[in-house]
Length: 216
Image (cartoon, rainbow, N blue to C red):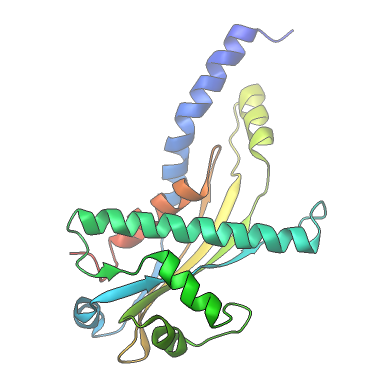
């Protein structure tokens, strides 16, 4: 028989430790970063920037059909874009970013009118359509080696931890006037129990912002 009181205490410990485990795993690997020689100059000359809806790919799952997978990817793209926008807007309010950030409703409405993403567009075309000085594009590759429920069960019964989300992300900043990428951040990390788009983006952006040319 499993002692209910001991199980409850372990579950509470899992809830609190999940944040710590996530942070440790996130910071355990090194990101690959590219700067153009004039990255900081061009970034600080930009007045308004736009966050393009991320391209999201999710590892195939036999239990999910192709159409459901596409819908899940669209949903995650919206979630990630919203979280990135909220994160950068907060830093804008704190005075850490000087550029204006185009609201995502305007960004998405203009992109939808242009037929994006069904109609692929270059960075230069995205700049012209959105009428901005810089764009932040991103790609998220997601896998889920085990469900949150399975991870909780394993941690409770045998004290082992497993990642529930592996994310390979690439962020790029393009300068519209010069029509080139001025910064790229490529990173692979894992999130543990309780990982969400909000927590993943917060951890990612906290790490990436230390190297991002927009940050004052």
